[in-house]
Length: 73
Image 1 (cartoon, one colour):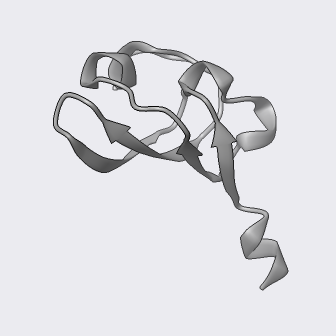
Image 2 (tube, one colour):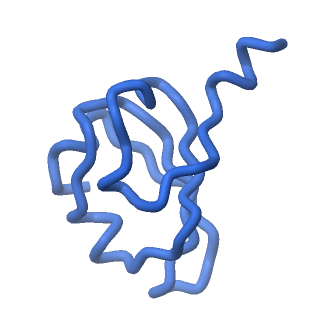
Image 3 (tube, helix red, strand yellow):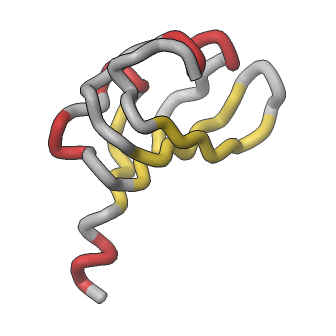
């Protein structure tokens, strides 16, 4: 069970803060982003789930991308 805790990251300020250590993890953002920011901001080239508050929809959302360094989700 301890390894499951290591798969969760809860201290990223935004997509641009995603780093190589975040590969294959669930990342919780600590600030709200708009739909446009979520779709176009880039981070490291990692496969990860992103848990974010979307300020456009006013909802918490779970996003997935196989390469967060590539804008175009």
